[in-house]
Image (cartoon, rainbow, N blue to C red):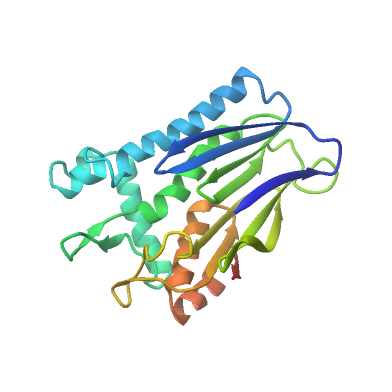
Length: 258
């Protein structure tokens, strides 16, 4: 997905920062007043530090991350960050509400299943990082993590009408990546897309016990990136019961199929 900004009045200042975290580019965009201030720089630094801290806990690529040490039995759950227990609880909740289409028990190299919450960690981290930006007066912000994003603004900015800062988010055509199949105008909220067109068969289907690769994509919008991302994955791999669960049990979230 891509984003750009429009306003109903003369544009405010704009600034962007980019760092590499969790194996992907993460960009933070600010628009509004005093975005070159020390407070803005500290907020952006704290947001990026959130990605670093969560990666130290949950990375599946760093052998000494807490997750990998937990898997090897070198530490117990009580010796890990409280975030690990939160991830366990979020995974159980997600599995229940999606009717089993989302899981944090994923295939390991030896043919078994291991605890792997990375399917929810990215969105969760973006939501946590956003808390540092939301306190900047007169500022609207966007965090883009590998194409999934969360936008918002300080409470003193309007969400619609005169003075609102709108982020126009394009939804990529999975069959032709130079083309858009739709666009969303957001002043607040999250957008997550799930599919296999970019990374191949990396999504696990619990019902069949296999990694799947099929055409198309699912984009979910809603208040948080944690749950937008969970639902995007679940709806892409899930069956009719998951679609029914979304229709009745995900207020504030909407889906676009491509």
